Image (cartoon, rainbow, N blue to C red):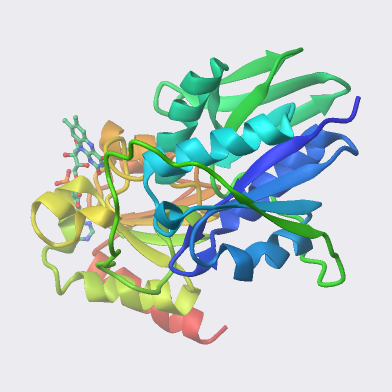
Length: 321
Ligand code: FAD
């Protein structure tokens, strides 16, 4: 049976995050020929609505209220609940991002719905849907099968391929007034610590550094490799605690969970808490001068050597391609 599926598009720094398009692709599978309705919130929503349609949404709903210009979990939750009440979808899909994690739990609680979070794969077999999600910090996977009731899931970035952009697609963009009340927080302005660059959670290639990088300056060697590869720089908590890198780049259990196509771990020992955040990367390369370092247990390719010799060599070679 075909279904109506609601998808939240996520806007950051004036652009739609890639996970928004991956959520549309997941929604299309669940919709099974039914309608995919995208919800876009925020000051740039109107400008970006057509892009959601070009990536496969059938129409876009934009909730409007002065307090929705900037993200607050309270405001966005109230707006999405009102769209859900108006649209009565059979499924809701959000990205498993900081925003998605925060509001999905609130929306699920308000709707008294179950929530399958952090989905990395999806199988649709008629009305039966199986959602795969990692458990025990990525050491095992569980499959949740839904046979009836509201389907509500968050999908991990970089796991479900988005559809190709089709510039000829058109669809309705509707603005609806929503009521936002009793807000506990009002965001007046957003000042970003870093602008531009590749978002760590959506990066296809990550060059990550640990305590072995030895200093903040040492990270420039990793940045050079990341720039040549069009990737992002990440860090272990060891490197962050030592002041070599910003905590916003920390990968791991208490940092960001990443699933790039390629993760290059440089001077990282491979502690379980770090591995929890990167073990599902498609290809892992470890560079470490200690051949016994546990990172080699999860690596597909290992280079035993000094990162300050190996990384510049890699950069030079990749520059030639
Ligand atoms: P180290 O363990 O000190 O390893 C440095 C490595 O660099 C060594 O293997 C060494 O051989 C190698 N090395 C040194 N010099 C060179 C060189 N010149 N060339 C090549 N290799 C070199 N950690 C995280 O990363 N993310 C988390 O989210 C996280 N959450 C945590 C949560 C909790 C509750 C706890 C208790 C810990 C958490 N940790 C986390 C910390 C984790 O346990 C480790 O302490 C940390 O990951 C170690 O960082 P590291 O590998 O950079 O440093």
